[in-house]
Length: 231
Image (cartoon, rainbow, N blue to C red; front, side, top):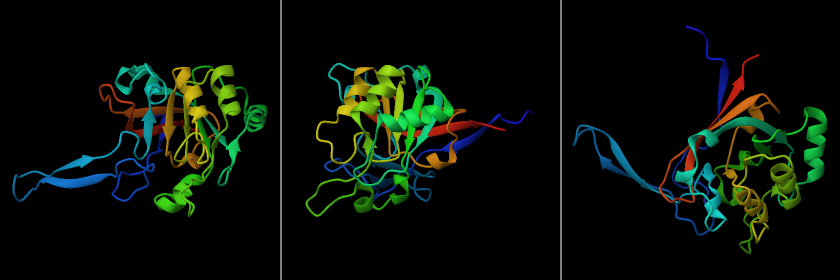
């Protein structure tokens, strides 16, 4: 049998009680529903918000009347993946100049692609205070993508999936979520709370988004995999 031509990189944080969630979102709860000793099989029930952990967000999350997660065709959950690595701290944002520098090295982003922004922030997971950058006044401080950079990536280059290894595309200080709305306005899918992006090449990979087709849902926790072409 021929060897699978890709190296598989899991970009997903495990779902576990006590993991970081967006302020106000329901925490993850897991409880036993059946036991091997009693029912003869093992089963648990769980509850969580639709945007908990590593997750995919549909346009409907930011756009009234936008596509829900169940309405997104499966073919749109697979795309060539390009990884922009820019170490960012606290309130820093990816800017158009960062994208231009990346393109000068690796070539232009092609239409229809997925873009993952690797800031290095995922190393703070699962410490909620550190990962959210929560200050004493309750404000959040983590990196994101500036609206201008999102305009370049989505409207100028035509990317249809944008992900990041932080709690949100827009960064912790955003009050209007404009970068997310720009992506949603173009029918794009967002990915948040990614991990292991440091294991990816700048180009030459594919992304596979295992989102649940929740009827009418704004998003879904997802097992996100990268397929990296073997040398």
